[in-house]
Image (cartoon, rainbow, N blue to C red; front, side):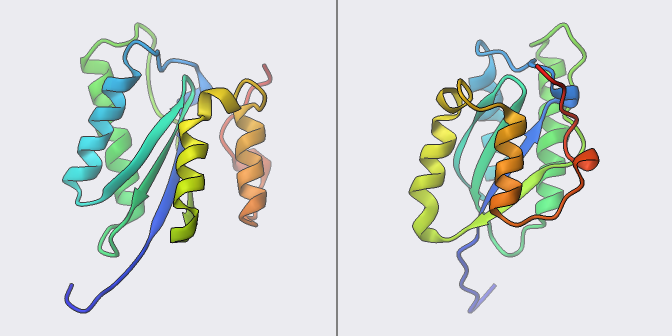
Length: 154
């Protein structure tokens, strides 16, 4: 797009169906590389991807021509197929419906990067449910708890 100048930074969060801890550390790096390829092939800029066995965070620089819902749908669909075809898990793997998407300004990039980088340390103290509800509240996103990811008490 000529004469279009933007800075759009989005953190995307989504979970494994039923919040099952199926993303194993032995293959999570391969999954993240695969998702990186999807994002790059769609013309977006990956800043960082990281997560836990039951969910992932993706932070991207997004072009205005991108439809975020289409991008997330492609990430989930293609990575789901990749996981199944790679036989990474004997359990049935699917991503949960829905996702969270949160926008940031340029000056927050370093903080969001560090936040996502340190997911494994953070989750020693804070559950995914607590983290996700905190993000929703921080961004003043109205929600009904019954429509938020399926959370099961640990």
